[in-house]
Length: 167
Figure 1: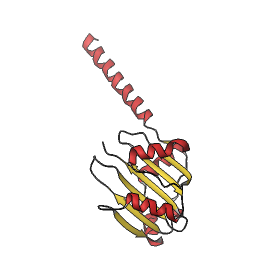
Figure 2: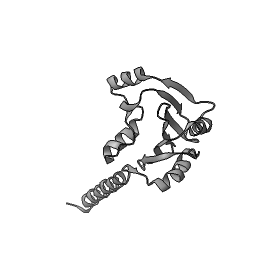
Figure 3: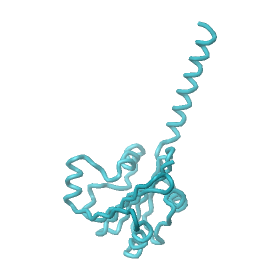
Figure 4: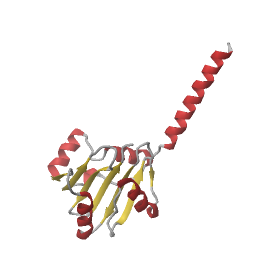
């Protein structure tokens, strides 16, 4: 083989190796509790409520920063979430048990990315089958501002927030 062919083969090996390293560093992980508020603030640009018990979060460390957070709160905490994340451009929908039954039949999940993350790392932060009713808030924007999808389980006072930034 000539020198040019060897260089081409070596170059391909380097590219494949680099790609594998990048992919392996994008694995989802559960975030330690003490780091959740800070990481959430950095990605979502907002604060979590003061009362956020059982706080858990996962992220995938992809090119676009994203985080999925779950916590239990009280009515004041829910109001803090609605105030912080409501406003112009936010779609709010009331969901009932029929919505979740239809989604189950269609094998649709409210949080597709975090669902995959959970499967990958074997951590269970949410179970859509336990949802009976609640409110969903959606806000998708351009890359200058974070977007989010929120589900508020009013009966159990549990809040789920998936926040992301498109870079």
